[in-house]
Amino acid sequence: MNLSRHSHSKINWEEKKEHLGKIRMLYTLFAVQLIIALVWASFALSYLDPFGNGILKYWWVALITGIICLVILLALYFVAALRKTPLSMVMYIVFTLCFMYTVGYFCLLDKKYLVYYALWLLTAIAIGFAIYAWAAPNGMSSMIAMMVVLFACLMVFLVFLIFTSITFIGLSLVLLIILIFGFYLHYDVRKMVRGGVNDYNVEDPWAGAVTIWGDGLLVFFRFFELLGRACCKTSD
Image (cartoon, rainbow, N blue to C red):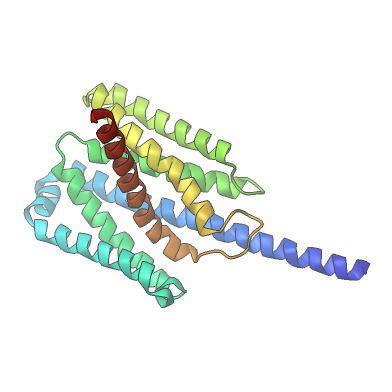
């Protein structure tokens, strides 16, 4: 009896360790994705002539990369075989490269630098989640996730407020939108792993680092839908 309990406990511990490793991998891949996009956008903004202006001139390349991102996102949702390695790794790499180029184009297109600011906010959140996930022996609680999101966003907000000419209102509105996405990001990862660190049915982290963008967009659609209904009821 004791031997059976010890064996069962060992299996649970090993499964829990593997599960936690996949969660950490998902956060890391998401952070890497954003870091690559941020480096690319920063380089393009720093070297406008001829590099950045060349990207703006050939806008159709950004259109193609954006469409590829959308196709990969939909494919991962509806084709289960693509959500398994090594195909999920290929999908992640292609998506990351196309995402990098598309985001860089919009950062160049936006002369108020709000897209670039939003990219910094998202990258800070992703790095914060990845660092905490690797440092903590257990999963991240909702309270800790909220603290990570708030701290990361406030740090970036203060830097842009002090060192850039972006208006306070613009910084605040973008901050609010990214805060909503950041709070949902932690919830969505928990949903992907189906309830937390003690449940072992984990989505492939390579695929999860891509599909999380689609889930995030759905949150905003739902948010604006509820906001619209509330406004309609008020007018009635």
